[in-house]
Length: 276
Image (tube, rainbow, N blue to C red):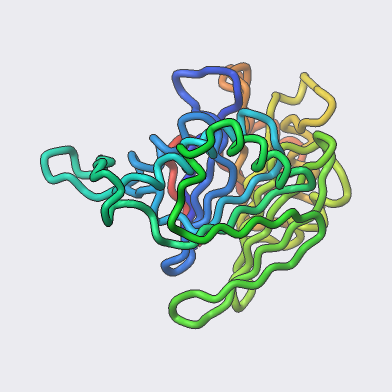
């Protein structure tokens, strides 16, 4: 399993950090967890194209986590392929009038309660630009779920979800391989029993840490609360993400280790790749 951090920041514009987006690669399955503004550009910078993505999974419906959904659907009308005249990790969308160039791969759209209505309203507004499709879309709303998918090599992976404390409907995700290797992504959350529960024993926990320990905002974690979640869940590796600009002025690793000295913790950076 490989994870690429497309955006380690928030909805606040930052030269250093993009909005939330995380690519998970399992065999030849590609899962995108959230797609905030700029995520698709980061995807291309990481050497991938939208047509590879089979799953789009949203933690909640705030714009800093969902804005590139409409761009993703629009890009399905175009071909995405390597262009030798551009840099190695840059791919070009080529409009061929829809003749053999559009997306054909099925797409799974997954989100919390209210996601279906969100999708319907969004696509209704943009009309034919996103609705004239030639591929299959399945839409699921999840809360406490355990979905099972099969790879091309006939092994199975699980996508588990649980509701967390943030907006009215917010979920965290756990992706689990046969044998138990797992990665958990919190989305936005306050400290709650459910985020500890779904992260239990995870090989990698990608956890929101909006602020340093001296700042607290309802619905979010700071470094001390993030350390508490990771310690109670006994995760093997902690990655702090969803970092507001103020975080760059603090030593978050030191703050986390002050609460849990044994913690293996890193600060997320855009285009960082982690393998487990």
